[in-house]
Length: 249
Image (tube, rainbow, N blue to C red):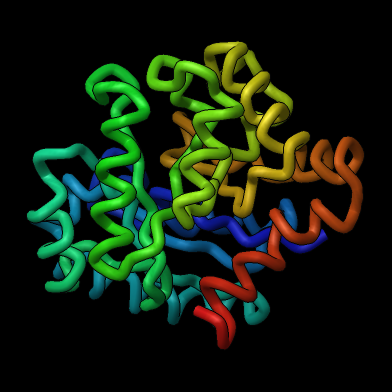
Protein backbone atom coordinates (compact mmCIF):
# COMPACT_ATOMS: atom_id res chain seq x y z
CA UNK A 1 0.00 0.00 0.00
CA UNK A 2 1.38 3.41 -0.98
CA UNK A 3 2.62 5.69 1.81
CA UNK A 4 2.88 9.47 1.92
CA UNK A 5 5.46 10.41 4.55
CA UNK A 6 4.48 13.88 5.77
CA UNK A 7 7.12 14.26 8.50
CA UNK A 8 10.86 13.94 7.85
CA UNK A 9 14.18 15.66 8.51
CA UNK A 10 16.00 14.19 5.55
CA UNK A 11 16.80 17.42 3.76
CA UNK A 12 20.45 17.89 4.64
CA UNK A 13 22.31 20.56 6.58
CA UNK A 14 19.32 22.34 8.10
CA UNK A 15 18.77 20.82 11.55
CA UNK A 16 19.65 17.63 13.47
CA UNK A 17 18.61 15.53 10.48
CA UNK A 18 20.65 14.45 7.45
CA UNK A 19 24.18 15.82 7.49
CA UNK A 20 24.90 15.84 3.77
CA UNK A 21 23.41 15.18 0.35
CA UNK A 22 24.55 11.56 0.29
CA UNK A 23 22.73 10.85 3.55
CA UNK A 24 19.62 12.58 2.24
CA UNK A 25 19.63 10.32 -0.79
CA UNK A 26 20.25 7.22 1.34
CA UNK A 27 17.30 8.09 3.60
CA UNK A 28 15.08 8.76 0.61
CA UNK A 29 16.10 5.41 -0.84
CA UNK A 30 15.14 3.59 2.37
CA UNK A 31 11.78 5.33 2.42
CA UNK A 32 11.19 4.40 -1.21
CA UNK A 33 12.07 0.74 -0.62
CA UNK A 34 9.33 0.59 2.03
CA UNK A 35 6.56 1.86 -0.22
CA UNK A 36 6.82 5.62 0.28
CA UNK A 37 5.90 7.58 -2.85
CA UNK A 38 5.61 11.08 -1.41
CA UNK A 39 7.91 12.75 1.12
CA UNK A 40 7.48 16.08 2.88
CA UNK A 41 10.76 17.71 3.91
CA UNK A 42 9.70 19.18 7.26
CA UNK A 43 12.88 20.40 8.91
CA UNK A 44 12.69 21.90 12.40
CA UNK A 45 11.69 25.54 12.57
CA UNK A 46 14.75 26.42 14.67
CA UNK A 47 16.95 25.39 11.74
CA UNK A 48 14.79 27.16 9.18
CA UNK A 49 15.19 30.47 10.98
CA UNK A 50 18.78 30.74 9.74
CA UNK A 51 18.93 28.15 6.95
CA UNK A 52 15.70 28.73 5.01
CA UNK A 53 17.50 29.99 1.92
CA UNK A 54 19.67 26.86 1.88
CA UNK A 55 16.53 24.80 2.46
CA UNK A 56 14.86 26.07 -0.70
CA UNK A 57 18.02 25.66 -2.78
CA UNK A 58 18.74 22.14 -1.53
CA UNK A 59 15.10 21.14 -1.90
CA UNK A 60 15.23 21.95 -5.63
CA UNK A 61 18.51 20.09 -5.91
CA UNK A 62 17.07 16.98 -4.26
CA UNK A 63 13.96 17.14 -6.43
CA UNK A 64 16.11 16.94 -9.54
CA UNK A 65 18.14 14.02 -8.21
CA UNK A 66 15.06 12.16 -6.98
CA UNK A 67 13.15 12.57 -10.24
CA UNK A 68 16.05 10.93 -12.08
CA UNK A 69 16.39 8.02 -9.64
CA UNK A 70 12.76 7.49 -8.64
CA UNK A 71 10.37 8.86 -11.29
CA UNK A 72 7.30 7.88 -9.24
CA UNK A 73 8.47 9.58 -6.03
CA UNK A 74 7.66 13.23 -5.25
CA UNK A 75 9.13 15.60 -2.67
CA UNK A 76 7.12 18.38 -1.03
CA UNK A 77 8.03 21.36 1.14
CA UNK A 78 7.04 21.77 4.77
CA UNK A 79 8.34 22.64 8.23
CA UNK A 80 7.92 21.21 11.73
CA UNK A 81 7.11 24.30 13.76
CA UNK A 82 7.85 24.22 17.49
CA UNK A 83 4.88 26.08 18.95
CA UNK A 84 4.15 27.82 22.23
CA UNK A 85 1.90 30.61 23.42
CA UNK A 86 4.41 33.47 23.50
CA UNK A 87 5.93 32.67 20.10
CA UNK A 88 2.76 32.48 18.02
CA UNK A 89 2.83 36.04 16.60
CA UNK A 90 6.42 35.54 15.37
CA UNK A 91 5.58 32.05 14.08
CA UNK A 92 2.76 33.40 11.95
CA UNK A 93 5.07 36.12 10.61
CA UNK A 94 7.66 33.49 9.67
CA UNK A 95 5.01 31.44 7.89
CA UNK A 96 3.79 34.44 5.92
CA UNK A 97 7.35 35.45 5.06
CA UNK A 98 8.11 31.97 3.72
CA UNK A 99 10.72 31.21 6.38
CA UNK A 100 8.54 28.36 7.65
CA UNK A 101 7.04 26.68 4.55
CA UNK A 102 3.48 25.43 4.78
CA UNK A 103 2.73 21.89 3.66
CA UNK A 104 3.19 21.97 -0.13
CA UNK A 105 2.03 25.58 -0.29
CA UNK A 106 -1.33 24.75 1.30
CA UNK A 107 -2.85 26.38 4.38
CA UNK A 108 -1.84 23.37 6.48
CA UNK A 109 1.06 23.72 8.92
CA UNK A 110 2.81 20.99 10.93
CA UNK A 111 2.99 22.05 14.61
CA UNK A 112 4.88 20.29 17.39
CA UNK A 113 4.95 20.91 21.14
CA UNK A 114 7.61 20.49 23.80
CA UNK A 115 6.40 17.70 26.14
CA UNK A 116 8.40 19.22 29.00
CA UNK A 117 7.80 22.89 28.34
CA UNK A 118 4.14 23.06 27.30
CA UNK A 119 1.77 24.13 30.06
CA UNK A 120 -0.84 21.48 29.47
CA UNK A 121 -3.48 21.00 26.82
CA UNK A 122 -4.70 24.56 27.28
CA UNK A 123 -1.45 25.94 25.92
CA UNK A 124 -1.70 23.56 22.98
CA UNK A 125 -5.24 24.75 22.42
CA UNK A 126 -4.22 28.41 22.54
CA UNK A 127 -1.46 27.92 19.96
CA UNK A 128 -3.65 25.85 17.66
CA UNK A 129 -6.54 28.31 17.86
CA UNK A 130 -4.14 31.17 17.17
CA UNK A 131 -3.00 29.49 13.96
CA UNK A 132 -6.60 28.76 12.96
CA UNK A 133 -7.60 32.36 13.58
CA UNK A 134 -4.82 33.44 11.21
CA UNK A 135 -6.13 31.17 8.45
CA UNK A 136 -3.87 28.14 8.89
CA UNK A 137 -4.97 24.57 9.58
CA UNK A 138 -2.70 22.87 12.13
CA UNK A 139 -1.50 19.29 11.86
CA UNK A 140 -0.44 18.10 15.32
CA UNK A 141 2.95 16.44 14.82
CA UNK A 142 3.55 13.01 16.41
CA UNK A 143 0.51 13.33 18.66
CA UNK A 144 1.42 10.12 20.51
CA UNK A 145 4.43 11.82 22.12
CA UNK A 146 2.53 14.17 24.41
CA UNK A 147 1.68 11.93 27.37
CA UNK A 148 3.16 14.57 29.70
CA UNK A 149 0.87 17.25 28.26
CA UNK A 150 -2.43 15.38 28.11
CA UNK A 151 -4.66 14.89 31.13
CA UNK A 152 -6.97 12.47 29.34
CA UNK A 153 -5.26 11.66 26.03
CA UNK A 154 -8.27 10.44 24.08
CA UNK A 155 -10.62 13.19 25.19
CA UNK A 156 -7.95 15.87 24.89
CA UNK A 157 -6.97 14.97 21.35
CA UNK A 158 -10.59 14.60 20.28
CA UNK A 159 -11.31 18.10 21.61
CA UNK A 160 -8.35 19.54 19.67
CA UNK A 161 -9.60 17.87 16.51
CA UNK A 162 -12.99 19.47 17.03
CA UNK A 163 -11.28 22.85 16.61
CA UNK A 164 -10.39 21.87 13.05
CA UNK A 165 -6.93 20.36 13.60
CA UNK A 166 -5.55 17.24 11.95
CA UNK A 167 -3.36 14.58 13.58
CA UNK A 168 -0.13 12.90 12.51
CA UNK A 169 1.54 9.93 14.21
CA UNK A 170 4.95 8.37 13.62
CA UNK A 171 4.79 5.00 11.92
CA UNK A 172 7.42 3.41 14.15
CA UNK A 173 5.31 4.20 17.21
CA UNK A 174 2.56 1.83 16.05
CA UNK A 175 4.61 -1.32 16.64
CA UNK A 176 7.88 -0.52 18.38
CA UNK A 177 8.94 0.25 21.93
CA UNK A 178 12.58 -0.78 21.67
CA UNK A 179 15.66 -0.09 19.60
CA UNK A 180 15.80 3.56 18.58
CA UNK A 181 12.42 4.30 20.14
CA UNK A 182 11.88 4.59 23.89
CA UNK A 183 8.68 4.79 25.87
CA UNK A 184 5.81 2.32 25.78
CA UNK A 185 3.27 5.14 26.07
CA UNK A 186 3.96 6.10 22.45
CA UNK A 187 2.82 2.72 21.17
CA UNK A 188 -0.16 2.73 23.49
CA UNK A 189 -1.31 6.20 22.46
CA UNK A 190 -0.64 5.71 18.74
CA UNK A 191 -2.89 2.65 18.72
CA UNK A 192 -5.51 4.28 20.94
CA UNK A 193 -5.76 7.19 18.53
CA UNK A 194 -5.94 4.83 15.55
CA UNK A 195 -8.64 2.73 17.20
CA UNK A 196 -10.77 5.82 17.69
CA UNK A 197 -10.21 7.09 14.14
CA UNK A 198 -8.41 10.24 15.27
CA UNK A 199 -5.36 9.87 13.02
CA UNK A 200 -5.25 11.66 9.66
CA UNK A 201 -1.63 11.36 8.49
CA UNK A 202 1.54 9.38 9.15
CA UNK A 203 5.25 10.13 8.99
CA UNK A 204 8.56 8.48 9.70
CA UNK A 205 10.12 11.49 11.49
CA UNK A 206 13.34 10.21 9.90
CA UNK A 207 16.52 12.07 10.81
CA UNK A 208 19.75 10.24 10.05
CA UNK A 209 21.03 6.77 9.26
CA UNK A 210 22.18 6.34 12.88
CA UNK A 211 19.20 8.05 14.54
CA UNK A 212 15.56 7.63 13.58
CA UNK A 213 16.25 6.08 10.20
CA UNK A 214 13.09 5.59 8.10
CA UNK A 215 10.85 2.85 9.49
CA UNK A 216 7.67 2.96 7.45
CA UNK A 217 6.80 -0.57 6.42
CA UNK A 218 6.27 -2.25 9.80
CA UNK A 219 3.94 0.44 11.10
CA UNK A 220 2.05 0.70 7.83
CA UNK A 221 1.42 -3.04 7.71
CA UNK A 222 0.30 -3.04 11.35
CA UNK A 223 -2.24 -0.30 10.60
CA UNK A 224 -3.58 -2.29 7.67
CA UNK A 225 -3.88 -5.51 9.66
CA UNK A 226 -5.32 -3.98 12.84
CA UNK A 227 -7.59 -1.30 11.44
CA UNK A 228 -8.49 -2.44 7.93
CA UNK A 229 -7.58 -1.52 4.39
CA UNK A 230 -10.01 1.39 4.07
CA UNK A 231 -8.77 3.32 7.10
CA UNK A 232 -5.16 2.36 6.34
CA UNK A 233 -5.43 3.87 2.86
CA UNK A 234 -6.80 7.10 4.30
CA UNK A 235 -4.08 7.62 6.89
CA UNK A 236 -1.20 6.22 4.83
CA UNK A 237 -1.82 8.19 1.66
CA UNK A 238 -5.32 9.26 0.66
CA UNK A 239 -5.80 12.09 3.19
CA UNK A 240 -2.42 13.54 2.25
CA UNK A 241 -3.27 13.29 -1.44
CA UNK A 242 -6.63 15.00 -0.98
CA UNK A 243 -5.70 17.71 1.54
CA UNK A 244 -2.01 18.44 1.05
CA UNK A 245 -1.22 17.46 -2.53
CA UNK A 246 -4.42 17.55 -4.58
CA UNK A 247 -6.97 20.11 -5.59
CA UNK A 248 -8.40 20.45 -2.07
CA UNK A 249 -5.18 21.80 -0.55
